[in-house]
Length: 601
DNA sequence: TTAGGGTTAG
Image (cartoon, rainbow, N blue to C red; front, side, top):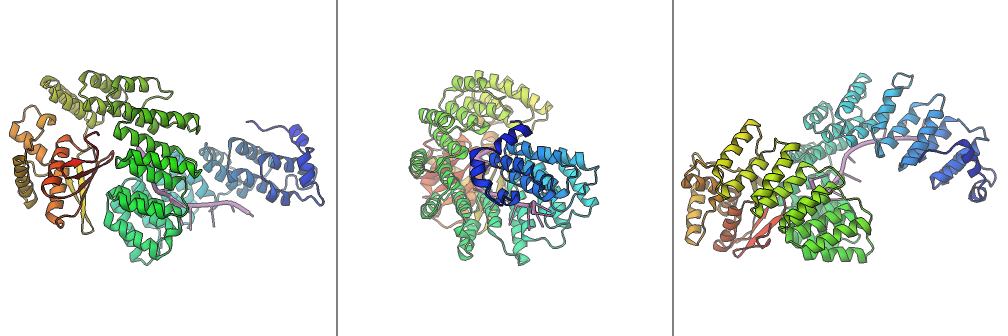
């Protein structure tokens, strides 16, 4: 909305509300701003001030702009800019306020443009200027602009300022340059809690939980007291790693130091417990929370969804609504995932429609992805294809990738080829896509296609992310890579795995080598490749190193393979162990020879 | 008269 002219402003000043509330004597415009509750009222105050001496006064205009930038909207920012431009000699204070507003608005980089515009003038940026500008760059993921600001702050000797440092770290991590952030951090002589938090959060958000946790330990070594924000990031790292022991320790720490009064800490604890495979702990914490906000409800709905408990997710949503808590986009993402994991196509469709029409939430690419998954997994591949084709936005490779997985699950080579073409048009560097397609060819014995595809993959230098599974034993997280030991299996772990497979075979396990791509391999070689998959290595490690009868919790970075899924079911039966396996999509709870996913995943 | 780090999704 463009801001109205002076004539409109002056007409507003004569409205009834204005006369009633603000023309009592003595009407002091500065005082009026502190009582102001809407942009409309603010305009009336400004119009009123035109008649007074205050019009054009720096501190008065600054107050007006501050009001506009507190929770910026398109119109409030446009009005603020109008006031800013009208100032004959703006001061840096006023600019800082404008920059803060932009950094919180939908057009954060406007802060940088304004900065570039005024830089040549007499306005000298100060230690209040950089945090807002850097925040804007972080939000917009504008690396170049952020780096330029870093240079300017260095020239002005402000790069080690206590307020500037955390935003520099935050800007670099949001722009995916964690190492640059670490350089900034390492230059700080005595980093404070906020600096540690910025760096720990950066590691955690960039999927580097081990570094986050080691920095957390370093922080404790320096006797710096963590605060609730530290705990949020550390919990998020525990969740990434599936590190239940450390997560429990943080829970105890939070209880002891009074951090459990924070709703966000509880929400992060719920998420951690759920992602570490302990859904019961998540539920009991959730039920104990006196006040639950949208995020807490969403976290629990998402937790149920990831554990394949769609019914519970949906019931919780009903409870949430009956307590008049407004759902957000994440609540619906949880519900849609719950439906897609369990094949509830109609219910998922209904939630999508309610989200858009009843709650006026604009679907994001993630919601679309969930819908494609819902249709695809349920075998409605053509519908899923049509859904992507009709989207109001340009489909991303990820969206097609979800459909490609579904084609693989439903053994549809023809559509998989078509979908792969669409993916390769957008991104041909993702090795996983070639692997899925060649697995499909292999399963259908189209060996000549397997060979040519592998050649194409090699020519395009596409790399597949290796499978990694991890397991925590006695506070230490052990990682296993798929294929470890294929060439020379000499360790105790490999011998134990070989023995276990022998026993499994006696119980009826038949290795499913159909998805092992390499056409030139012997049956024996294929079986070995399959045997040393990361999840089998991790589960065996768990069997060897944890007390009988305890639950084995494994985290995998990709989707679990069909053969490992079969093996895990049998292991749970033969060794009397519950195995909780988190893959990139969801949880699988293996018990008594069955999986909680009901073999639908 | 302006200022730093923030869970749930990805």
